[in-house]
Image (tube, rainbow, N blue to C red; front, side, top):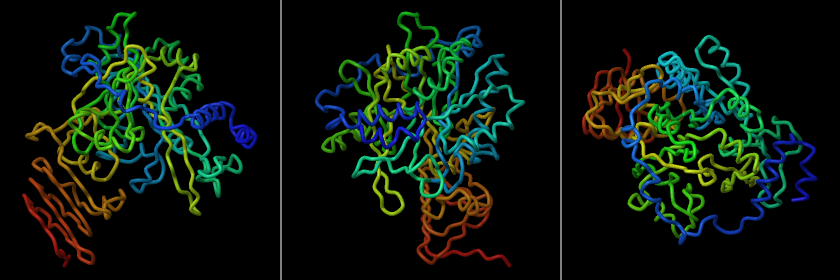
Length: 470
């Protein structure tokens, strides 16, 4: 590590360097898997509470008192590249021309106006998203939401063979464009603390943060969970709540809660020995997964940071840069810190609180009539007869948002849809209705235009179907 320090100390900020040095030092020390499979136990019954039990406590008369202790933090470090967009993912339009960020601001403003409260919004940006996000924040100047930002760290990618940084200087353009990275959302604790914002919010009387990914449209402020937190007796106050929800076959890779060394702990698939990966994916053994909606005590974060006691497992993420250079980046996950907090708790919440938009398939769901939009919040339409969302799989022709938008003249009626698979060169006319299981496959060289006004119910469409303007 001394070679690394000599190479690197001159070209990074002091706090970033210190954080990276600690992470890299731990990486060199760790040998073998971070968990012993035989020591894993199921969490005790009372350590994961059903949401209905939390809701049954009701709400206090003065909800504003609870809300005034809360800060909403959105993880805003990601780019929209996986959906073919440039710039921050939070600036992609997802519903009625509203971006993820628009919806977030509307939700919090609605809370503040309804309860005469003062819930601020904090965005954790990365060096990739900070500049573009700050430009757009000017549009919210007259909204009833105070908005703060801080940046997560900037760490160097490491040559997999030499274990030396591949950066030549501090520049982030040209040949240096790919050699820096934001080290995962587990960096929130140190960056929030180092920014001075944590201290400022504590001084303003704030006690808890509600943290979630900005692309999870189900992650709205839940007044029942907040009330559960602030109504606990001081000596036994819960410092960390992780919202979990029941696994489906689509969630088998999601992190889960276990009991390990007497503590509630997050187990990620990357930590599982290869021989036990299938067991980890089992829906029968590990029934719940982490939504990454977290409620965390501000004073506890401050204490753990000051004591240097924030211990999170290292995620080693391999990448290949231009020129076939193999590098690694060291990351941590925000939920992995659960074991460091006192009286940590899981709450098994309804699936509706986990509505991430990672792909255009997800985007189609949230843009459709399956959901209604009110005050920035999406709720499942009452006209849908069952609460689960359809399984939608759009092919590679739909991957990029701009191309996806050109393939739908209007978003189909999906209220009675169970399953949709679309592959190849397919377009949809206006006012199409999809019901049951619909599979549309245009083979290579073919094109399928679904005519305006079509109703497809339990249909497989393949071959070539062109609708020509004339």
